[in-house]
Length: 548
Image (cartoon, rainbow, N blue to C red; front, side, top):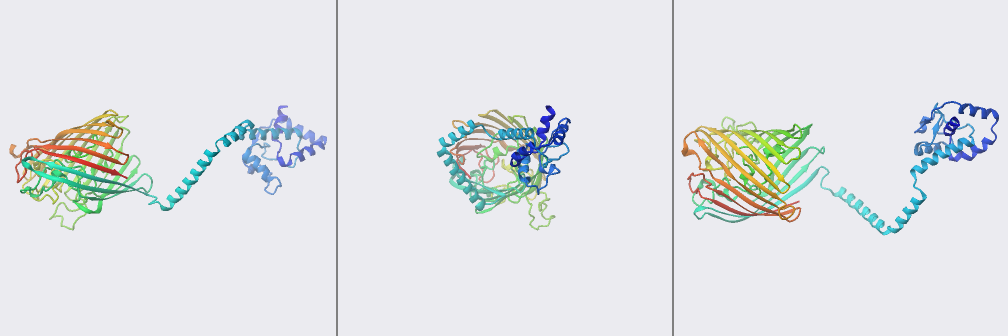
């Protein structure tokens, strides 16, 4: 009986020929029956086929070809003979017909629900007819919107992001120095383009009228010069390009990965922070540039539209990251002879080479970074600091006391070289509290000798304080100042302190208002130069930010 059942399964079956096969079975002669019995006595393995082409004796010209193809390829209930034949012209027994029909019914049952299931589905369809109609309408509407977006989209490769800042501030200093109230803006448009889905071409256009209160009228330190306090700058001022009511190219960089290494190259306002994917601090200052750059001469210091460079960021493993960057502040050469201007060109003296090793634990609650930078560039000229109140060099530091900016120099044409080391650590104690600390030291060398510049800070954040998205931030530290000088104690600073406090109110996902206060004590570090006072500077600020 077992062998007979195999023959039943092996018999050719097509619904269109079932009854014809049954009729022919009545007229089988004994020789045919003997042939079937002979086949049934063989131990034949089932030969399941998945394509009609596997049956060698079935031709596309056969009248039942399409029906047989459907049974084989759609329902999978035809089993051929071991020699991959169908033998469609052979007579069909009732047993073969019954076995084949049963196999196909089993397949149908697998694909179809029971009558009870179909009745239940029908009732549900009738009960939720209105809801289904609503969903159908929404789907049609979405399809129409997708079609419209595809036809009118800005670009298939580029996403546009933007930010708008309004800054209301007023700085108060010693001896009645008062900048008056300033209300200014910054607008930035970022075009983020990807050609492979993993690379990024970032183009930023910006217009900016914001000038940090502590940097206003720094030129010359002449009488009525305002408040010359290089160490107390807003993090979002226009020091890089100067005030310009027109949109100008602020940043142009391209990033692309090669395995676990991400490369960056750029020709406008390239920063070390653009190359390195991480740092060792959870503290993100809203206001003071110093607290965004606690390590003198390393981070976020190439703030000029001319800075060009390249670097890489290597994710060694989930915990360690290594970065290397080279940046020059005079990338586009002006055609000046290199002998007359040693800073000219992308390989001129006005350069910074930085390396960083960063760490984070498995859950990201503890981070750290150890960085080193070698810098070389012209000395800072306090009488004419590039017209915007900031040094345009890599030799010394860009934010700090005036002595730390000038460095051990006898002339503004001197080249200053420096070795800078920085350590930063951050600990997310909980989801609602983080603590971060940084320390930096720089060793400056120039024509007048050598000096050492140091700084440190500690920052606390309280995310989601009082409401989700809001944040309270507090920071205190000492801005970069000269702690020792080879020329004697007269060229060292008495250390100034700085602090800031802010509270960001996240009104919506795209709008935030941040009232804040920051201050720098003894901003001149004890130096008397022109109208530079050594008192304390207090700056209340109200920042409003829109993101889109």
